[in-house]
Image (cartoon, rainbow, N blue to C red; front, side, top):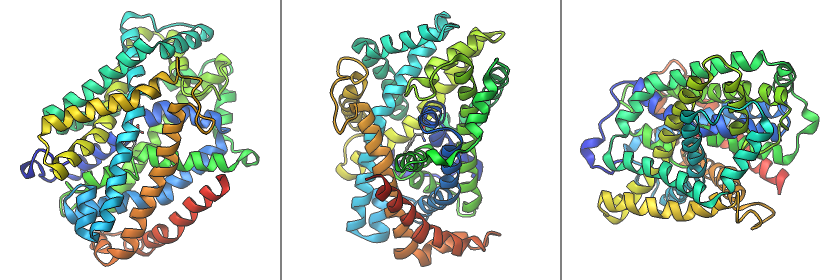
Length: 445
Ligand code: PFF
């Protein structure tokens, strides 16, 4: 993130600046698009409980660990790990940066869907009561290679422009208003969704755990989603931690970021899943769930047209702040490691992401038959990066912070009221995180 030079590595004026930036990365399509459909595929309440359990334990511990690495060095992940741990650890940083690139490549596909739905919201064509029609429209759009590649290109282009212009900070600051606006709008939509006939069955399904349906795969998805929704395991939080002022309270900031990210997920769940039941859409309908359900809710709301526009605008903003947080470290890596010019690096990341993301986009249409390990290209990219590489990255950072740099790491909590948390943090890093990650992988494979 220090791509534009040392001068830019000013510390955040306040802790709020950090929390906003990290939450801007965390709150995005993960909450509004991924969370509802993954909960939908994995049985509702029990999944929610496991997801929340992961966030509250390893999620908070790892947020704090990544922030600590950034705070101790003031550097982004690869350089930070090299400074603190030597050349071998720098490899963890390189792999994490590659992972950020791979996540970005499928993230932009869904970012493109948001762009298209925003345009449809402007024209009003998105509003429809008939969910059969909405399903058909979503399938037709995502299967159309020109439409899906073009919308992906627009979203990626917007992300690249923000990074090239170096206006990330301004965008993050705008989050101070736009993130609460998104939350408020979600509350409004929830109010409508909950009053739809049949919606309460969805609420009960979302909030009542039935642990008998839990499989290894469910545990893996919940773990992966915890990493994805908190932007963990790919070095993102290290970057934000590097800007933290010396006197910022780290533990409190970690709890804030985790709270905002999970709140966004829970609001999205309450917005979509009751409506899914009310409209008779199967909850396991897959990645299109949000895009199929939202327009039908808007169609049943007063001022639905305006609300649809505001919703997709705010969602696009949230998606862009997350995509920028993935794009920037990849570009910064090329600048720091290979001394590329900033404009060259941004262009290279743009082109590489487009090429890597295109097969994922096409896997909803002309390449839907291409299956690897029984998954479409999109699903495989999502699965490998979110469920395998992110936990692996998190595990390495947990072990690094809990062993190699522990004497230094614990000092970041000095003077904080949360002294009781210091030993708990170490247990979470060195015992719970490895047991949970290896345990879940063992169950699944
Ligand atoms: N947390 C983001 C979201 O939920 O949309 C996605 C994300 C951003 C994941 C940055 C990973 C990351 F490093």
